[in-house]
Image (cartoon, rainbow, N blue to C red; front, top):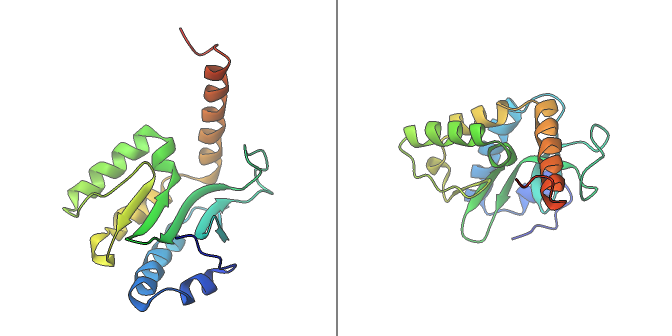
Length: 158
């Protein structure tokens, strides 16, 4: 469910009470752990935490790099964590810590789905958000783009 809200407050105000409370709690966790340099914005119909274009304009689509995001979807809420998608080590560390909490592990490539706030281990989410400084996230992105271009041109095959 893509929101047309243009501000974070408008996004939150449009949510039903139970979802607003959950998204606000996760937002507080993200903001408390967000490394320096990332910005909070409305982008892609979600509350996004992104690398500002002023800091890194060379993206494949001209949009800021999304580091994390929060969204209320039709059947669940989600926290998007791009770093666990882009880095196998981060993903493995995240999964290990998440599963150790005993909470249901409902994770896609980069999204962590939850129906209620109690379903989500906020401490683990905070650790994942805090784990990757902006400069390292940009380096990982650039490395991935170089690898993809190399594979596409046939140089990466062997």
